[in-house]
Length: 261
Image 1 (cartoon, rainbow, N blue to C red):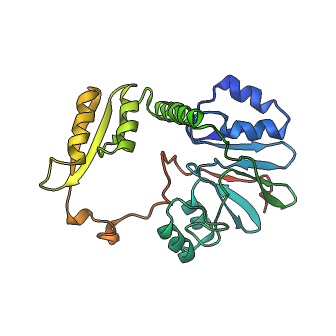
Image 2: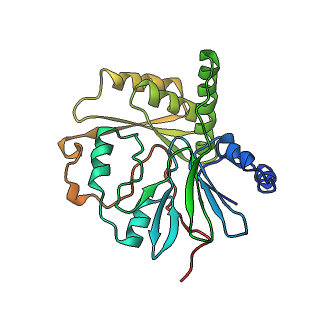
Image 3: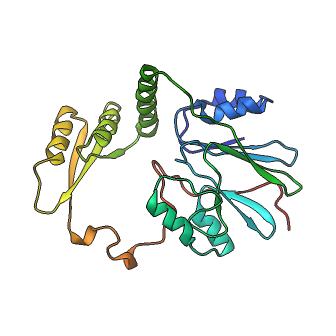
């Protein structure tokens, strides 16, 4: 078994998990710990199962290459493998709803994203299938608020503890909350983007107030001009992978056990 991405599981947790035999236990483990991670299990009998996190923060992609099923954490890596072109239908859907999952598609033709909250299983005979493993819990308001608080704190701290950290600090509620949580663990660089020539007023002042309240935040201002507008000078932008919320690990490609010549 392998775990990819930031995950709060300890070695002892993973040791117990890999010794379990029930699929339900593995399904629960895919969301049991803090972080945005992917579980992958080779059962030793020619069957591989990959669990895609419910939020899609650590997306998983699949394709067929020379009759073999291949999966990866990078749609671009698989597109390069099969020579795929951009999927314009996916792009249209993504522009309309950036956080939505598009069934059977990704940014590249012939590359499919595993549905968030589903596991994908491929066996030695070439068969593969999706199955849901997660369902949104129904919580009372107070319980949901506390759950969100705990998950936010744990998710930020697992990413910043013991390492250099940076955070958007726009002055809005979302970024200010995350920057403040990160600052409780150690130094964090807070980045405030603003129009060139304007360094006060509105959210800029709110960002300064947050930085003053947390001395471990090293506040940096990033002035933006017309050259920084969305879609400006696209020719100078390097080819990158599909965007996702949160940390993006280095692309990982893993062939299924049915790889063969």
